[in-house]
Amino acid sequence: MEALNTCHYLGAREMIEGLKAKGFKFTLGYEGSGLFILGMLRGGGYYIDVGASQKIIDGKIELKSDSVLEKFTKNGLKFEDGSELAADVVIFATGYTDIRGFIRRICGDEITDQVKDVGGLDKEGEMKGFWRDSGVEGLHFAMGNIMMARPFSLSLALQIKAMEEGIFGDRYSL
Image (cartoon, rainbow, N blue to C red; front, side):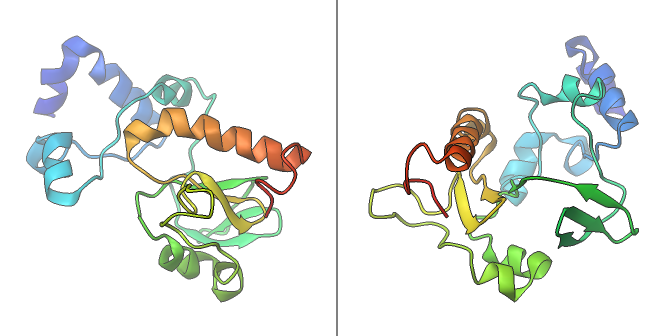
């Protein structure tokens, strides 16, 4: 808890306590060392608030952190505790570079075999699978570090909207 006292002047104590109250799970790093050491030791594992923390605290963004994801259902997600969560779109933002192994464990072979290549360049010179549709309806990838999240999540949202409305023809079609 020493790290909380050190950060109090930044309002971090209130933010951390508010996030905890909503079920947000996090660490203050190896022996409380913070995100720099997590980045050095693990290449990630940290969260930097880019505007979502207050929305989580205010209940505008909800969390489900009390059970492990078991599988996808026709209408959303099912968790190991038996609970279900309806979802129109699922975006994996895991930090993995080739997410297909992770997708295979959760979704199985049938879904994963439909997933487009992740990484490399497509015929238009864009990265395959990064901030684009996965090849499976309703499943999109958002890959990269936290600094990419804010600008590229907007790009992904616009691509999803374009796909829904068919405004770019087959440019963003599955």
